[in-house]
Length: 463
Image (cartoon, rainbow, N blue to C red; front, side, top):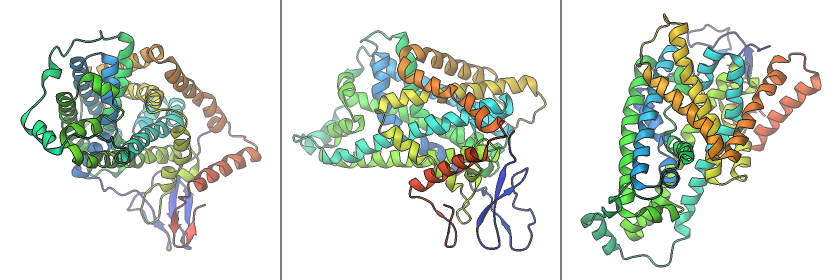
């Protein structure tokens, strides 16, 4: 049985409480004296929406993915083609999500759309792998990139070319010989394409985060499509030009040997001023990580509201009006991911589940077109856009099981564990008291272990 969602309110004494209700609170609701509704505010304007998408997308991907894409495509030309193709494909996915977001005006993104189309089982599996694999893995990847670049200034090579020579090179001489015979090199291997796809789509990942906070978007019918289109155009052009800039300065061989592409690139152009670049890259990673946690916490908040996660995750901070428990619950799992794998294996590991469910969510758009043709759709895309996106995602996910059987296989097995977990934690409603108590105690311990148990009201701690 799925329990009723929980709504957070402030009681007379100032405590944050769970108030069982069948719907979300609204600002206009009347409360008894001494009570005040705590709700998520509609503060996301068009400018803020564009800022969230661009700030979250442009993080570690543009500094991690060039090496992975080049390695799996085999040539400079093919890697640039892949960057452009991933940008177009991401735009198709973003446009599909714009239709879903303006038709289903609920926060939660993929989880909400899968729940609406495929029902609670698949929706639970989606939030299960988000909690165990996708978000901890993605945060760990960004954190590793952050750590690599923030430490780079302290491990500088002894011999650095003179600044004057570098400035002359940057301003006066553009090295275009790296683009000669751009498609020559290793033949593109079909088995390498899924991994190149993962690296490319990872760099563009983040266009879907605005759909996670739909209920906080002002005028979502106009804001979501506009914010997505503006952001993706800026990001795609910027990414392709950044990769062109990389190859005007360093060769394909040097890029593959570099552990920090942006640092190698900046050392060639800026000399001693290149010390600032790793810091800016690290700040970019930090901003992207912050945006991802901000958006995904809303997914956990909505899943808790629907009864698929513990009630505590649907509680809202009384002053900041944010789902703080849903934010801090990720910390322990992220720490485990951080110390259990390298950057590229983690990326393959999380990408399997991410793009599997992304493809399913967009396939759900096609299903809704036929199942509910009269559904109000303020923004509608041509049918070939979601069809191409969902087919590509699902095809690459299946092919990746052959390209990297270990990382993607582990991701697949963890995804499957969501099925018995659904029946154990959700369907089975006659759990013994010790089982319920154990589950609650484990969650409280997880929250306390982060040392981030925030004050939910004056002088009172949730934990």
